[in-house]
Image (cartoon, rainbow, N blue to C red; front, side, top):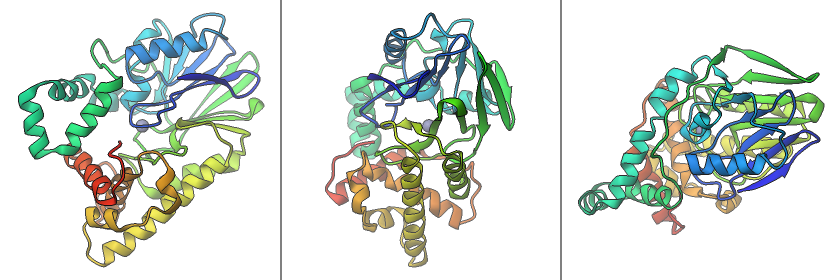
Length: 325
Ligand SMILES: [Zn+2]
């Protein structure tokens, strides 16, 4: 992890591996300090605090969660007494989608000989992601610290005269997707609306909403975007994400009309230059999302995670690329 200054008063802690759970955090170093997203486990959150402490005068008064996923909220508890701001849906969704016990159970399963053997035979993708996560993460000791200030459409912060504007743009990647714009600094903290040079994944939401959220970011025309995953970028980051989503939706449509399954479609779709993005086989999740839309399923239809990770695993194997999530 590294600290990067992105404007006079804005900073990012970047988790350079850019795979699932390797998320970025932001800091607006004004008005008592605002931290944006708090990492995936306590050791990463402590490291993030150490890095930001090089520039902040003291523990910040506020935390913003850009959405409910565990890798953006599991360090919340270390900001004792801070106001935690998020979209109205975030507390309930965190309880559903970010239960650290579920993730720790997966890691424990990798350590246990019997369950490991069973997983290898039945869900090789689930075993593979468990192994990947176990290498870097430990979800023990995490207690969900839920947001304390909730908003619906927009929420403004006045930080020593500098405005920070939170805008709800979901559901595109997740139910609670929020972007944080600091106009005076020319910075947008995009959460998982933007994955940079790593393959996006989305859970709740639609392609349409996601494209609209990216259009909004392009319209805001920031000098710097801090994405949820991957390196800091300019608006080209939003444009390339748009191009990826449009490409995948179009290719998925073609395959859907030919009667291919989402898995076969993902094996067949040419990654082109997107093959150089981290974890390209996560394409499967995006194809499956497109298929759900073509079938008219609701944007919040639940995911069978074991099946989803197996899909990514099988696509990686079929394409002869590294199994990475
Ligand atoms: Zn996320």
